[in-house]
Amino acid sequence: MRVLTGHKVNGCNDALKIEVLDEPGSGGASHAYLVRGFDTSNNPSHGVIQGDKSCLILFQNGPIAEVGTNGVTHEALLAIVIDRLESFQAGPYQCEENAAALSHLQAAQAALKSRTEKRLARGVEGTHTV
Image (tube, rainbow, N blue to C red; front, side, top):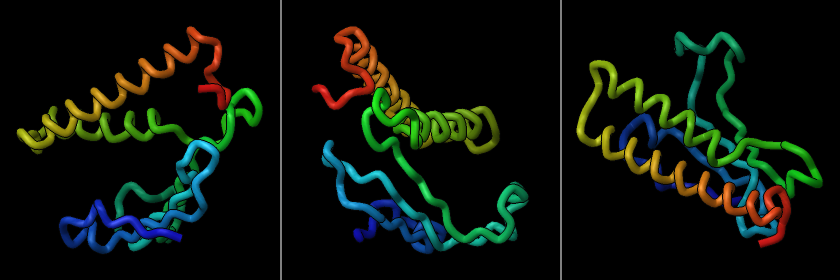
């Protein structure tokens, strides 16, 4: 198991522990991450999962054509973070740093979309074919 530390920058992030739960798969990346170190009982938005203190993130694992959709994608997680930053930028927490982060995330999302479109055009999307 590996522990990620790149997010640590303040007390909130310092409290969060991100564990990589599995070994890299055939593409060289891991698929299971566990985020611990928080308590949802004092989060006004929690309600869905009472008292949970961790969040499991499972990424797509295996070719979609063979295993179906079995996890989240980079694109889905980027869409969530983009939505949050767009909301901050439309409200009282807009700032230059959020704008820069939003721009970079949108560029990342566009690059991943371009990759997928090229794979669809070649007929290899959803497979392990390069």
